[in-house]
Length: 113
Length: 115
Picture (cartoon, each protein chain N blue to C red):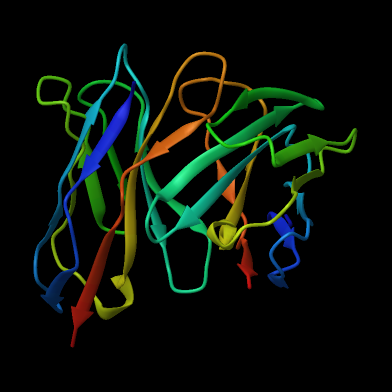
């Protein structure tokens, strides 16, 4: 079945460092891809999305490009802030007549001042 | 515009008891999905409801059930609680369609602890 593989954390960076969190997927067809963020004690917030190959999702300085050839959707940010510290989840929409999301295991990002 | 409301936020139950969790979606949204989040298994899909009908179900035992009302509010029920049911239960509110760009909006979750 469909699945998402995400790089293990935690990822610890200094403020203003470059961030990459790797995400690859296995799916039939052309799933929509998402990045969600979870702050401590909170639910999930949609960070960005892409619905077809070569689409680039972007929000709050974060970017991810839907790469069909490498089945990847890596999250990047040029300069992280302490406030970006959170858990990041890569997800795909399972497709068909459902909105079921399949999530990766999550990557904890800790940004130090 | 009000967000997704889940009640209660925190719950402590004893093994063998049953529990009901509630989710009020965003006004106008017709679909609700439920997810279980645990440190060991991560985020796992429980079920999805659309217009009071279950549209999809995850791989959970029959102790886990849900329903959706005509006002789109949803409840999930877990009977005969086990220690392993301790988790954060998240509800997602979805407009209703299954278009490729459909977004899911999550509530803050209900933290269930089984002792």
